[in-house]
Length: 97
Ligand SMILES: [Zn+2]
Image (cartoon, rainbow, N blue to C red; front, side, top):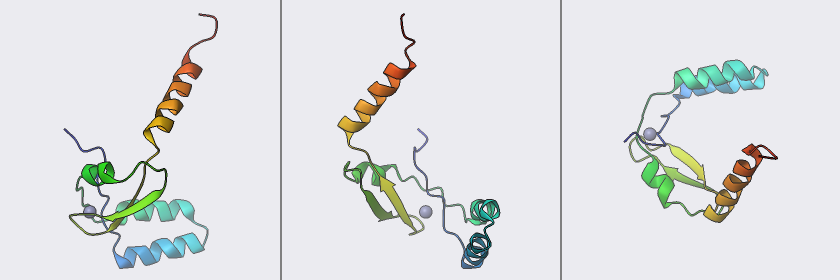
């Protein structure tokens, strides 16, 4: 099975500087492209880490087991997520059928 969450890898310092400079210059698109292309692919599965964090709707940071960069996850409580899913389902059902 393919992991649901994979590590994007670290951003080398040199590229990070360019991203920060682009952001400072208001070039958000360029910054995003640099960020995407500049990362060293890690690809480690973060599913176990994701599964281990509490479902409290708060942000939790953890370390990638392979490359050690900080990863941040936020899990919405299951009851709340189920309610949101039910709401979405209700919205998708056409009225009067
Ligand atoms: Zn990693």
